[in-house]
Image 1 (cartoon, rainbow, N blue to C red):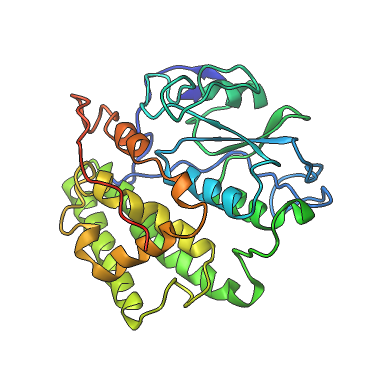
Image 2: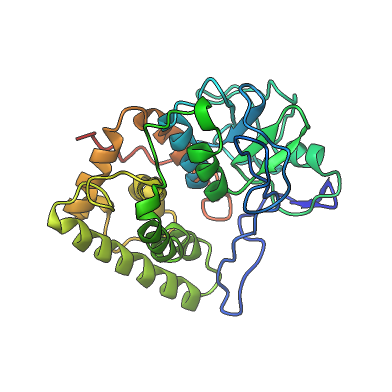
Length: 318
């Protein structure tokens, strides 16, 4: 991780724990917003106006948080507005690395070898883990934001006429429901699988494990009424946030993170839901199962041998 701008230790997934030995996720450190006119957003400072070609997105296909932003960028048709770099899937002793692994890229914007170099370009004294996604401003040469929930909403509404506004992932009339869904699903499932996988005590693991499967059971029951998405027939950011965890469940969380009571394929309604999301034009292109498996199974703390499982196969779109 970085301490005052210097890389001082080998990468490790757990940097903090609570009193029970549970995994504590790092808080994102860059929280500015792109807006159509450059005015300040909900957090941070202003002067980040929407402009074609100004901003660059750094992601990892393995990462569910980064995948949120990839899906939003695709659905809002921002590929020609916001450029993209993809790190290699295997984590190194210096964290995420750019390179030539199939599906990855070099960093053509800043010439970095490791993602942590992007962080020190933005703040030479930065401390913490160098995480994805990162939204970079070419003009000001700094990080705009590294919080996926913020970037997801910026891509939805921050680019004005540069984006496809026939798609609204955070519609006004559903915002209360979306916020409630996010608040329920994030701690128990999105972050719950990490709390199980990176727990350092049996107590913390079992608590997270039970919350994961209680939420999966709740979601299976929700879809039993025949609805297509979380908000009936309307696909929203809440679906993106759920999907990126579900698509990784059987390849990574079931085995590596010890969330092994049931597989996703054992939930008929959730399995069908994942197929429906994959069938949305553009979504399938944001999912790289090889990167997901190689990335998760490169975490030495959980898989010292580095052996990558051959299965499972990608679910079929419906």
